Image (cartoon, rainbow over the protein chains, first blue to last red):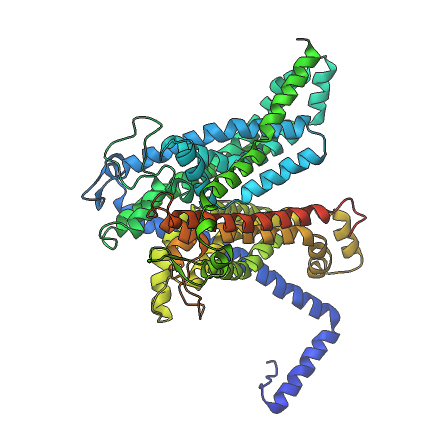
Length: 310
Length: 295
């Protein structure tokens, strides 16, 4: 039975004595501090995992009830208080495909220049700072940019085209980063061997470097796709419609989109309280879509790391 | 065209495309200025930034965004205070302490957390956290600074954690080994050797996390409550800049003063995040650790 020290006048003195004793006993004190620190570190890791788990679980738990075949294949009915979310799913698919077809080619070409051609210098520095700054531009500013440039200045109107371009530029830094990483991971010896055989530089890039970097580039782009599918603010003024009664006929039409649909239902819909299940259901579809895309990328990447041939 | 010329041409083409990011930045500035600057023919720039009254639809309208700027700064500071300890400690855990399996799980979780769409987090804050907070603390509204900061922190954690983790990995092995050889415990090695030498990277992580939080739109739009007044307590509603832009752009008549004021708010927001990013870039370049000789 260890002695007990009441935290009162006399007891306090004894307690400080004990603490001093532990402090004198250096190794014990040092490991005690380590234990406290490790505890804090583990708790913070736990908080993060639990936060993710909690949010995802809550959305699944509340949303799974409305998920049905009809929900994902039917139009919304009764001023969006009943029915499905099919047009929003299709709209998000269009916008995402549009965004990736803008972002991917531009991103890969930028990355090839930066890793294969550029020499360290002022211009490369400016390009890199530009990429970093672009990555930091707030999504709502991208929305304003899309509105000002594509919708107003170039007169595309609120459309799939304007939304795709805005989203494509938004994910550009992600794709450049991933492509750069993938290109850099191709061993220098591959390039040297090819050049030594008399192959020109751009042929080396297209026949040797790119094919080897392709899986890495793809993973990065998949993460970009996930990002594009989930963004709301950039499409609010450039592409998203409150409600459309039919699917878009051309790239100059407005579309419904999942993220915007959630926002509309939750803040401006009719009978906000009663449509909660539909809101959770839509959120669940979006989360499943985005996290599904991200998970695929993560799995492919870890698989590739194990398969690496060099 | 001979081979050398062809090579040169290809290089030139690639170079032009590589400039795209800088060009887009230029286009962003161009379109923001084109739509936003005309406001300052009607409103004095000082009144715009330091004006305390934001009544864009009143007659005559008042465009003072000071309360919006203050709101953005407050939620960003609180979010940073929550996100930095969690982000940095989890990075330490991943890079120094965790066993392989837990490390993989944690890294994937953080990546998935980063992937959660902001509208979903905002929705969660609005329909789950807000009612709970209102009931528990007996508040007039659950949509307030604390709620918005917590949700923003969730968004900033992955940014901070992953960049800080890279910085910690970059600390050279020799430092750690030297520290252990001197008889330091793991805790002492982490706090006295690893963290100090990764400090610039961690600072970069924090600044980029802040930049993420200040620019985040859907969360503050749905969760911060939307009151354009100076807050008196941390449970007051606020209206950060991105929320104001996103909420009002739909109603503002095309090219009206209100519309221009929202673009002008976008200009302020853009340059604030730009400043954050340039500072982060400066720090990470200036104090980059080269070889093991520099600490």
